[in-house]
Image (cartoon, rainbow, N blue to C red; front, side, top):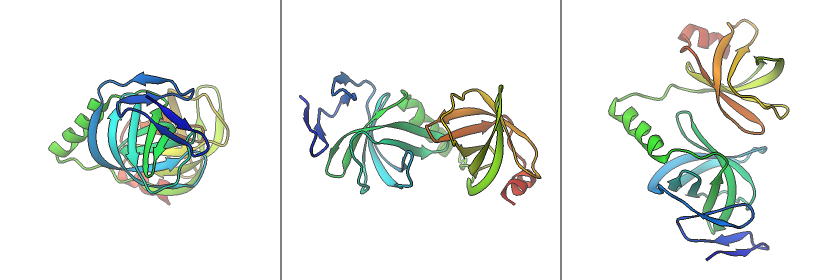
Length: 209
């Protein structure tokens, strides 16, 4: 059973249900219960903060956060590493939120990747926040952008206009070598790219200069 009160932006549904934008409920499979700290970002705004992910399925996430989010807002969950889940808030009960994913994920793969990384005692490559003008080259055009963060394995940059951009790109900046990579995720305002080859530390220093 689903109960929606638009004036309060409250949606109540079974824990294993996925609420679509039109209020329709569809069944969720491979639902995993976990307790994981993640970073939450509001798309198109400057609101961000920490949250605790409670449940994860291929098309649905539930989490707790002190941020005040309304139903219908687009958000991004940074689960660590390069795993970033994009979706829309579809329900709220106090500080507990329900989020419908824009693109389906593989929950078991996400959890397994984390276990493998911890088992191998590998650490995530440090990401450095930065605001640096760059040029992004696609197959058909070159456009100016702003680098938001970078590591030896990848980077995140902003989009000034909506772009239907997937596949391979090259990024460049004054005094830095051109770096080739592949788009791993895209929202309405940002893109993430994974480099084809891990960057040397000296080259990373030039990007951060």
